[in-house]
Length: 118
Image 1 (cartoon, helix red, strand yellow):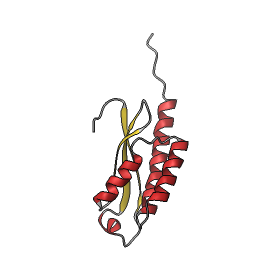
Image 2: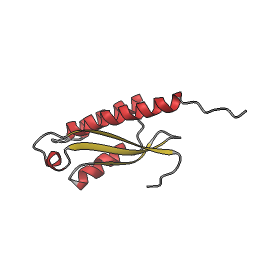
Image 3: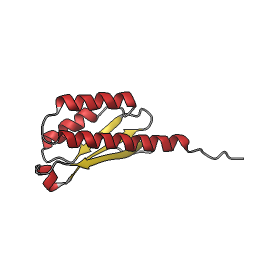
């Protein structure tokens, strides 16, 4: 991962279901993504899961996607259709939170004005 001035790191989280291994170890499902501000694409993604294959799978689903409204809906549907198991709802809820945090960041950036030098 290469961090530069044109990327931001955004997270989303939700509670895992009680009784799951992840719920006992982590308590929260967390998705973390690095987003390229010039393309708005997800460059890197990580999540809190116990199974390395699950982590890799979710990461691959997220990489290259955008968190625009349309991109988010496509991503949500893709995860909903392709991921099956106890952690699915926690990951989808964390994705919802991630989208909210991205929208909040994006709105804040759009409303900030740069002072003009005299």
